[in-house]
Image 1 (cartoon, rainbow, N blue to C red):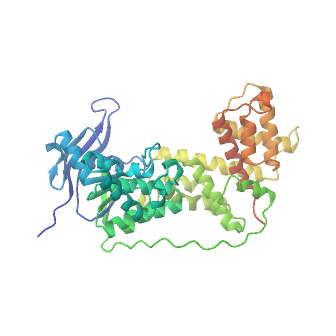
Image 2: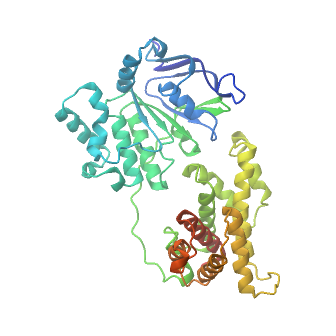
Image 3: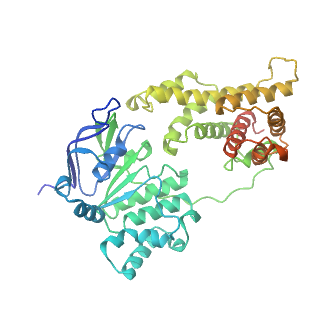
Amino acid sequence: MAVEPIIRTKNLEVIYNLGRSNQVNALGKIDLEIYPGEFIIFFGPSGCGKSTLLYSIAGLERGVMGDIFIDGKNFSDFKKTDFDHFRQSKMGMVFQAFHLIPSLNILSNIVLPQFSLGTSKQFREEKARQLLEYFGIAAQEKKLPPELSGGQQQRVAIARALMNDPDIIFADEPTGNLDSKSTKDVLQVLYNLNAEQKKTVILVTHSPDMLSYAHRVFYIKDGKIIDVKVNKAPAAMPKSAESKPKESVPTPSRDLELLAKTYTNLDFKMENSLLVHFKAQQIVNDVMTEMTSAEIDLILAQVEFILSETRDEKTLKKYLDDNIKNGGLGLDKRTAAKLTEKILAIIDEIKLLKSDDRKAKKETDTDHEVKQLRHYLFDIFDVKISNSIALARINEFIRERLDNKIDAKQLEVKLDLPISKKGAGLDSRLAKKLARRIDLVLLGKYTIK
């Protein structure tokens, strides 16, 4: 007997601002079938429509045209109240932003989906504790979400999505706000739900790291499915390895000791080749906050080549813009140009700061170094200063940071303090950005000997 698809769409379309001058065709006549127990990935660059497709299938997108069938039932046949109940019992949703209620403890957050089903408090809490135990966060049940790490909060969100034992788990960039370790942990959880509990998992991601684990990968671009890759023998995800004991580390130089207060992952045992990787990572992280950690990893190698001076900088833009099948990242030309400009601006400033042959000016070389860096910062962050005292103090504080008399946090405080208290009187957010960017430039300047 042939297996029926658990999800099927026919001529699925989503159009925003229909008939207006700013009409956007987000999805165009998509037909697909997804079968029970499959691990499916919607893959493609930012803005390609993969999240819109996910939300449409999950019943969260408005203005959808065409037909969507879940377990043979057409969305269009439901009344709103009936559909809400159907969705709560059949589907679980995991978002990038967790969406936990910060004023409720972890246990209370997890039991929320059960309230609409009218179950008893004892039943709800017992089931929630079973999920907490399964995900290894039972000890956190009385804590509030802000007291947990990002990875733990996402585990709570997944537990909440499973509270009504749905057949389908939708996950929209669930690791986009997580560090690399938490990313691996959360992806392991989703993989196990599919492999062990046979849940149908549909994952939206920028990252190619997961593609080999999926049964099928839908490649999406410009609101259309352009290709479907079938993995006849999906890879098995390895369990997270135990962390090794840390070895003793040498005493760092004062330069790197101050930088480490900003970049807590900086390892003083790094050889220069590893330091290049770390520099590249910080540069990419700084200018690409809208991207996932996995997508950032794809760009790191390109920036490392530039820092190592083994590749022409012009190839970075081509890499960002080139099609995924050609080994590129598949971004649109405008985004690729913008990101390239940001990355190269930081690298150029690093090179200027490292250079020993700066042009002589009337002022001293020291003053020129400060002025050069200040011009760069003011241009990047569109800083406007009308107070000569504030300008003089900004110069003074930059000099102190370049001479390693203060660290990034101390610089931030001085920039933020009012002029009356011997500060520069900047907005706190701007002070933080300037302090962070100065340290990023310094990170490129210093090497470990």
